[in-house]
Length: 486
Image (cartoon, rainbow, N blue to C red; front, side, top):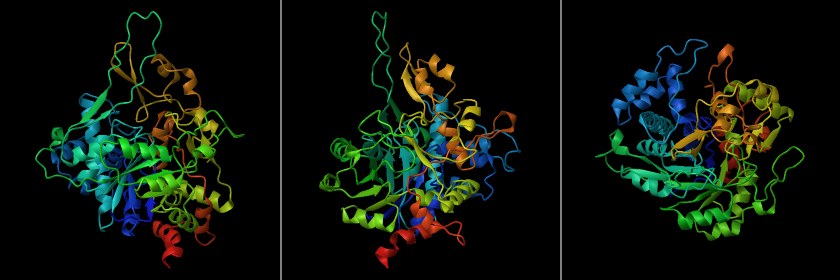
C-alpha cells in the first residue's frame, strides 16, 4: 500500500465530488469522493441536463446497461428542468421492496459514476467516503465504487465492524449483509404483547443486477475513521475482515463529530465541551501496528510535520479543500465564506442539536442559510430524502422509519419524543442545497443551504489575499507539502 501524506477529506454531499478528488489524486495524494446521498446527486444532475455529458459518459462504461437505459428514461432531461420545476425524487432508503431495489440501483450507479470520473486521466489512488450511520445505501454504494476500481474505503460516524467482511464478499460479487440498527419498543408493564426483538439485517445481492459471472474485483483497502484509540483497537480485534489503517479525527473537524466522553457539559455558546478523555493516545495508536492519519486541526505544514513526528503516516484535510475552486460547494457560497475569512469574521459553532442523528454537527454562521433562526423557523418541515431516518420497531413487529427533523406531529405519531425534535435541521436537503442541488418548494422558494466546516480557518486565510480571492486544490497540496519536500 503506497501511503499518501495527505488524504483529502470525504466531505458532505458532493462537496468532495469527482472534480476535487481527481485534482488531488492527480497530484499524488489521496483524493476521496463522497458517496453520501449519491443516488439523489445522480438523478438531479441528470434532471439538470448533464450539460457537459460527463455523467452519461461514465454511465456508458457501467457494466449493467439495462439499468442505465432505465435510469436515463426516468430521470434524464436533455434540456434540463424548466425554472421553478421540482426535482423528481429518488426512492427513500428502505429495507425491502421494489422501491428499495431501485434505491440500491441508483446508489450503486451513482457511486460508480463518481469514482469512474475521479479516476480518469491519472494513475493515482482514489477513495470513497461513507457514513456508517446511513446504513441502508452503503452496500450498494460500496459495490458501485468497487466496480469502478476504487482503491480505498473510508467510513466514520459509527462503528463499521462488518464492512471489511462485506468488502471481501462484494469483491467476489457475492451477497453481502449488514446488521441493521433498530430502535426497539420500550417494554411497558402489563402490555398484552411485545414486538419481536429479533435482530434485523439487510442484504445487497450483486446477482440481482447482473454481477454473477463477472471477474473478481480488487478489494479496496479499508480505513475506518475513529475518534479514540480504544475504538481503533476494538475494530482491529473484532472486525470481520482486514483493516489497512485508520483516520483519527478530533473534535475540531467539520461535519459530524463524535460526542464527548463526558456528557451534558456545554460552554457558554451551548457547544459540547471536549476534555482530556477525548484526546487520542497516539502512543497506543502506534502500538496497533497499522498506519494512521490525523484529522481535525492538522491542515497546515506545521500540522503535517507534527503528525509525522508522532508516528502518523500523514493527515486528512477537509476545510482547506472544501473551499478550493474544485470543491462541489456552490461558487457563490464559497465566495461569501472566503470574504468572511479575509475579514477574520467566520463563526463556526458545534451544534449539539442540528443533526437528526444526535451527533454534534459543526455549522458555519452564514446569513440566508439554515444556520440563522429566521431561515430555520420559516422552513416548513418535510422529510422527502430520508437518509438520516431512524429505523424503529413498530407494535406489530414490522419496521418503520422516522426522523427528528420531519414534521413534529408525524414524528410524535410514530412514537418519537417531542423533545428530540427541538432544533433539529434537515441536513439531507440543506446539504444538497450547498452544492447547487436544492429542491424547489412552494411559493418559489428553494431549500436553504447549511454549510459545515472545521474550526480552523487560519490556513485558508494564508492561501487568499487582496490579489488572490480564491485558490485551487494544487495550491492546497503545495502549501501542505512545500516545507517538507522543498
